Length: 327
Image (cartoon, rainbow, N blue to C red; front, top):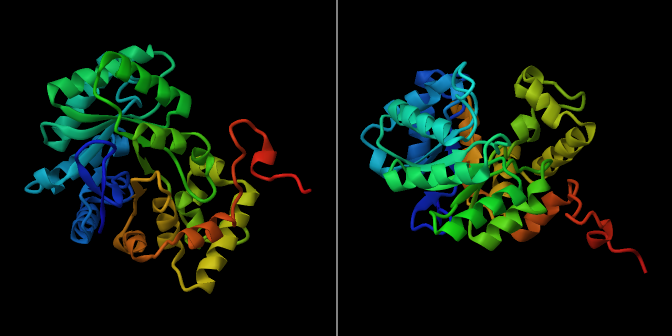
């Protein structure tokens, strides 16, 4: 396992981040413990959680599992989504962010988290209030590094500008969705992160299982999130995505590569990426993702894989910039 800088901080994190969304949900405590142990044995020191995962059970399980190892770990949590019926128990207001962090720390049984993500952009709350809430938590020592998840490039840049103008703790991480069929981040988010020295941990590297090889040409030969979860069906249900997945799986099999390992390695090989976030419901699934570090994802191999998918249009929408007209 290799290690990379967390943004421009002095902290080093493993090249894979383990996402604990399944803890307390698809994976019971015993399965969660087995996967946590496998991650630690593989060298992972970077764990992603959120207050909404399994209604807080994910954080509780992670808190129990990391006892005795806390000082070796870099722990992430997130807030934004509703945590109760109260109209104010959501969003990124100072009130909710502060209370959400206090509740997460109790569930995690720790005095701080290394990274706090604002899980989504909050249109209801002035941006300066949200960014100041992060700053106050950093000053209190309960959060070490501020971060943003699912924000656009312009929203993120505005937050960075506010931090720089006020000499507040700088943003160290962003967390976008990024995989072979979801490449919009390449257009502005990833270049923006590189320009600002912000690290990137990308979620859904296997596209909710679409790139795993278990879904056939009829768009659903196996059980999994794409058959049972309407959100993932909406996100990954377009026919062209299944066509890309089929080409990708065939490409991997021709070269003796495992699709899951290769999909994760493809994401991790982008120069802007600090770590892909891997997840699993059981040890077998997890091992396929852990094996991504064994793949020699050369620039040439990555380019071959990229060519199987659509290149997103440039921010200017001038398609000739990526497809120059023939002479």
